[in-house]
Length: 191
Image (cartoon, rainbow, N blue to C red; front, side):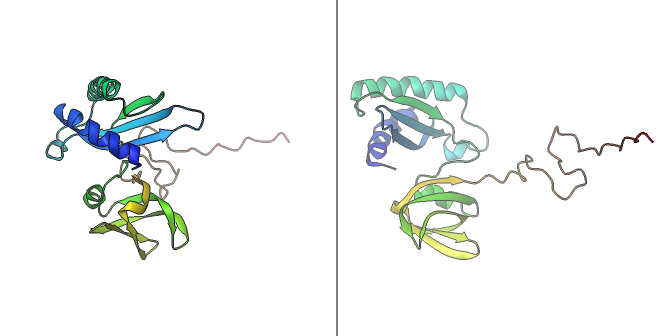
């Protein structure tokens, strides 16, 4: 996270927690033409993860409370747009604890500074060792210092979620609600 995102996150986390939610992280995206986007990602506490999800009503409640707090505290100069969201299936990862929680999952990572000639990588999260995250990238270990990670998101397994086509079936597309492809009968040619 940027310094501004870290500052705003520390300010808003208690407010979000008071509403029974968890602040996963914040993206602060200043715009070159002025203004900025402040995006908050919410989740339910770990103890409730199996039985509850973030709802639109949760996002609305957090948006109201956080807007009022930001108006009073005024940590961002100038105009900004506030967006409050659940993490979604391509969940962003902000902390080493979040990387550890999703060990075994695939992640897409952007680095602040190039490492071994790379600024981006996609690999399986193997483990977290102190402040380093170990990935398996194309069968090779790749360790990254947490403070060198600019952005990271889980890569959804669309096939496991039931949204990817089954390539091994005749007709090609076995997604729910999608009919199998049909071959057209050849039209007879006039003689």
